[in-house]
Length: 219
Image (cartoon, rainbow, N blue to C red; front, side, top):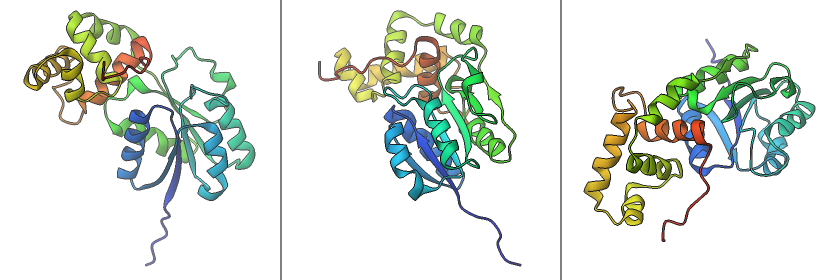
């Protein structure tokens, strides 16, 4: 009996390098052929060559066209391409502006890659979903942090390594490792082995405050 499966192609558009790499890795792990880029213009230029089955895009890409505008272009080029918005926009975002049949996933609603893969798979079979996090629980978690822990959380959201955090704070690696672990524990992120605490911490911060402006770690 022959194998009738096909390699599913996904085009990921995300201007934040940390999140772009994470999403691409998650989708490759689910046996997608992944093509990733940082802007709508780059996505349009490579679209014909990639011929994706699904577009996974942020809404705010830092430059125009934004993700919604890109999705409409993609639909005009390939009406059958599924659309998944993976974004920090709140659930109150103007969903009416999204192409019909699109899936809307708030980044902070994901504490493992399974939720993203499930949303993409649902959209591919024309079952659009909307996934958003409980706002109060996020705020409550952030509110338990000390000032030092909140500062560390911000640097994690910027994609800094423990070594970069130690350099910025003038601390030893051991001290930073302990502080990072305590921050994760305060947020309840060390309790489930399926959760990547660094990713979950970054998305929790971005959901509450938005992505921080890049800082110079050499200062």
